[in-house]
Length: 132
Image 1 (cartoon, rainbow, N blue to C red):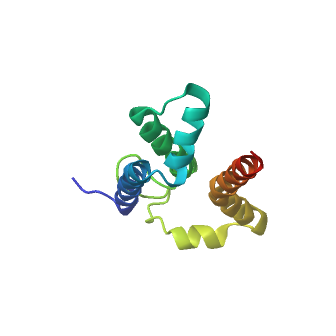
Image 2 (cartoon, rainbow, N blue to C red):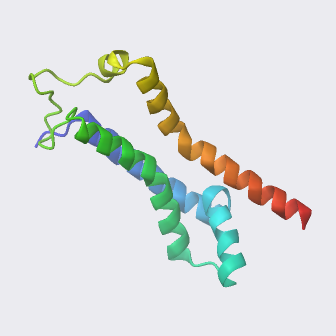
């Protein structure tokens, strides 16, 4: 069985997300720390499984969006072949160069959206806690 490089990258990203989820939970920092604070505010206690699961799911959203876009655009094949319709091997650099400027800006905006939203939410709650 031959694994293509996109599946390897996907599983490495999943492993890194899992490691970060556990690390941030046990240190009480980052996204998990913020989720722990929210749970204490709403429920009066923080649940281990819920915190790690939510952290993992939130961080997987951009990865799943990218995977969906690649499969939807037929850039990768579900048979681990990573072939285009004409039989050529998919090249990410060529694909990015083929995008028009508005589409390229959209791809970068989608990639940055979770970070921008996270920063906005963090800033809002940080400002709320400073007032109290």
